[in-house]
Length: 350
Image (cartoon, rainbow, N blue to C red; front, side):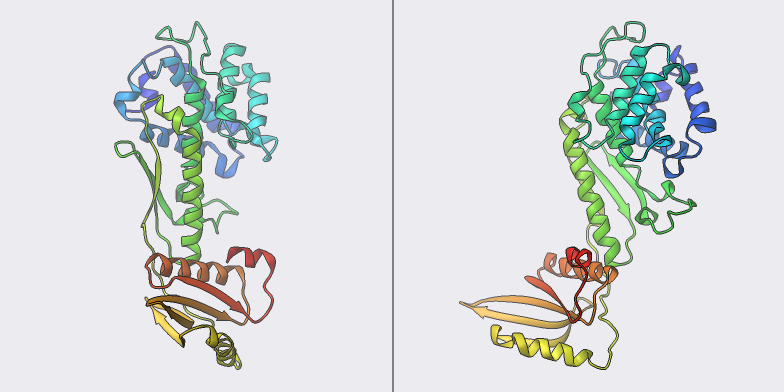
């Protein structure tokens, strides 16, 4: 069941339909990856986040709350028409100051919807607790209760964050290189309290970026976890599928002094280790120098990747491979040695 179906036979339905039509044909047409399709995706994700028995429980979701939440989904990015910097605050101001333009009946509806829209901002910009928890609009409630805008803001923040699959950027100019192209679905599983990011990484660089997306999504869920619990939703963890990644790591193609460079590094560090081997292969990853140090019966393995120069793509590949080998307990530590000075933004990756 969808949230919109719950209000389909109420007086709120025609008003929401008007918002959808305007958003599709007017308000959101020029917003690229934040256009009407994005809002439509956010609504579908919201429906997947919340099980049917919770949607239909008026002790949890008053029909007025559902209306406010659905309206906020199709208005939350309206501020991008003016600014991409803290557009959430622009949306807040635009809705409050122009509520008749958005077919809202009064300032109170506009205030409630604008607070929920603002809540999809970063926590430092608009903390969820800034939304009102006891907001009454007497002609909008179906249960007689006041509205919990913190709960609604938390749901919008997470549903918006989870719109990260390929359909958000498919066919859009300027988004050809987006990592979203390899994310086939973001799947909430409310019965387990987890969200799965289902992806198809091809390179170590893909894998590292996906791990960052997973960690950021986890951060966003932690921000609102307590507020979601008020809706009987217990999301606590983000999983990445596949949960492990292995791809070949090929060292740079040999150049005239490449093997001399590896040998020079190996000779330089040899006194520090029990054994030093060059050009070893572990789990299909080529390792320039593999060092073992045995002390008190304990063996420590260090992998050293040697390259004449280091760009961003290679840095991501190296970092991904070393992380994978550590996770598989094939090595204990890893490092990269570069002949030519790497730029600061590249060194930061490693």
